[in-house]
Structures are given as C-alpha cells and as structure tokens.
Length: 221
Image 1 (cartoon, rainbow, N blue to C red):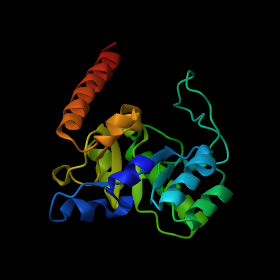
Image 2: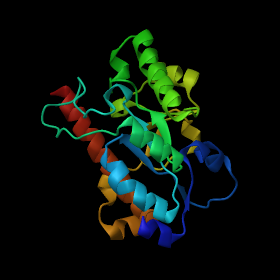
Image 3: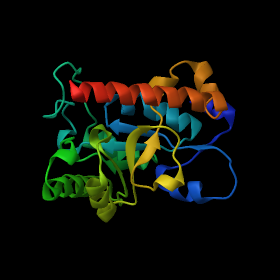
Image 4: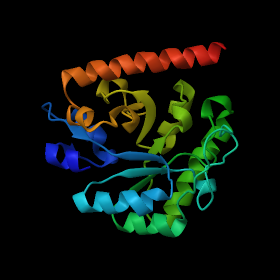
C-alpha cells in the first residue's frame, strides 16, 4: 500500500470501476478487493487501508461469517482460517470499507440449477444489507466460475461482478466478468512498482496462459 501511495495511482471504490473505464483518457486506476472475508482483514488490512485512505471491497461468504473457510466445496488440503465476525464487518463498514456478496456457501454456481444459484446470491446480498444498513451492488463468483447463464443471473441483482480472469479490466468485456490481478503475481515490490508498464502486461499475459493451461490439464485429468 505504501508503494501504491507513492506511485500516485488513483485508488477508486469498486463500484466506480464502470464509470472509470468509460471515462476519457488513459489515466491508470486501481480498485482493491478481498475475497472470502478472512478475519485478518480486520486486524491487519483495515489499519493499513485507513492509514492511506484507500477504499476497498470485501466479498463475504455469509453463511460462514464467524466460522472458518471450511465450506462444502473447500479442498481438504486448504488451511482452515477464521472469517470475519459480523461485529467486525459492521465496524469496517463504518470505517468506509465496502462489502459485496460471494454467495452464501461459496458454491460453484455453474454446477447448480438457476434457482439455487440465484438464492445463493440474493440471500447473501440481503444478509449483508441487513447487517450494514447499505445496499450491496457488487458480487464475486466463487472460484471465478461463471458462464453466460450465471452472469445473467448476477445481472439481475448486482451492478457488477468480478471474475478471477487474470488481467486488467477492460470495458469491452462488460461489467459482469471483470478481470482482476491477484497479488500472488505481484509479491515482489519491484513488480508492483511496474504495474502499468508494457513489461507487466506481457508478464501477466504469460502467467495467464500458463494458469489456463494448468487448469485445462487438471480438468482433462
């Protein structure tokens, strides 16, 4: 966050991304998002974000708030970690952090019928709205799994939705499969400092190809 602040790149709330992408000019901008709602966001991330005055959006798996990330589809080899309590969510919301839906149970929505997928979205959305007293307009697909059917369902209830497609968000692809760049690929400070360079675009493009190939191999095996 210090590097981001020093770079003087605009940090915008996620809900402003469509307007930012439609705006004139090529000034770079960043929106900060966190999936799942781990409890360490309250302890570690909130003080840093507050220090720099950065907005951020946290996507919650609402049936598992105050529990851990042991939802039914979670692989057994993934470490179980505690998730935010509702009292912490309310405190973060009061501090300016936005919250979006990540479904009730972190289900792969491409593998369930429409009525279940929609209920996962709407029940999660209502739970968050009831807790923080604000409208929830953003959504993130669990595992990034979405197809035309699921994107259409998300469009009924949200203003935008985030995927896990690795890359910079571009308006031509619409607002219900927004690309994102995982910090996993930018862990070295020198890479983060070159975020908007041509070299970084080539690097992320190569990593996207590798990741897609790995996913294809896993699927075929």
